[in-house]
Length: 262
Ligand SMILES: Nc1ncnc2c1ncn2[C@@H]1O[C@H](COP(=O)(O)OP(=O)(O)OP(=O)(O)O)[C@@H](O)[C@H]1O
Ligand SMILES: [Mg+2]
Image (cartoon, rainbow, N blue to C red; front, side, top):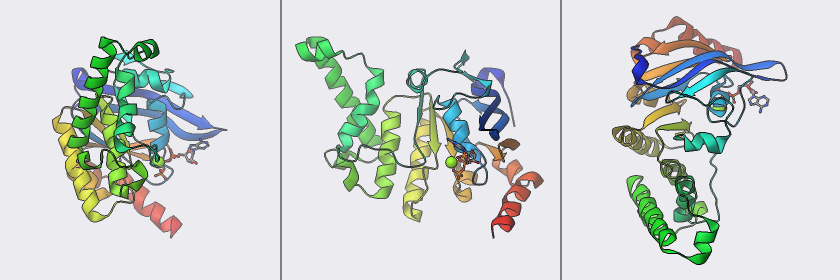
């Protein structure tokens, strides 16, 4: 894998997270190049979501540092990290089910704008302009993700695949440099997965860097530029899809695990 110091957007240095003595991840060094689709794979319980939670500030790491866009962001709170240009989706869909699709997106845009409560009460010109701008942007992300026709539908009435898209749209509305997706294709049918792959490629074309946790190997092999493999909390491989596919440790981690759980 080509590593170019100037091209690294995110770097973790010896990130470790323990839960009551159990090492969920241990000394993980991750390098994410700007503009690439990076996949994070590994068997169940390998520590993928824990690594996401550390990177995005949901868990303070037990040890190690996180450098994003040249800045040390270790220990920042999730909303502070979001402000630096990171957005994520969750393994289990987290939407406001009783709000409309549009409202779900507007919540995503909030951290980008300075709209104050006082401004909203006074309904001043700046606030009005900002509101207009926010709505315009929200519509733009709905179009981008193919959800415009559902703008006024309640989130809970969307199909499963569209709910996943809405989560993505909401993350995009914060205009991130890095987008972290935790198993976005989980539970999707073949058609929905294909559509999602197209959407992820379109996001890459917008020069947004992507870190993708995914179990669907066909999808990963097709769209990832680089792959990092975790097993039992440890990074066991990294490289291009071709390199990772023939890595002995990776094959053993997957096949060995399947034998044990069979
Ligand atoms: N909040 C927590 N408290 C205690 N243990 C945790 C917590 N979160 C994760 N773990 C443990 O850390 C390990 C890694 O879990 P994690 O959810 O990160 O794995 P994963 O690779 O995302 O798995 P999956 O593919 O099933 O989503 C597991 O042993 C898990 O039980
Ligand atoms: Mg997980």
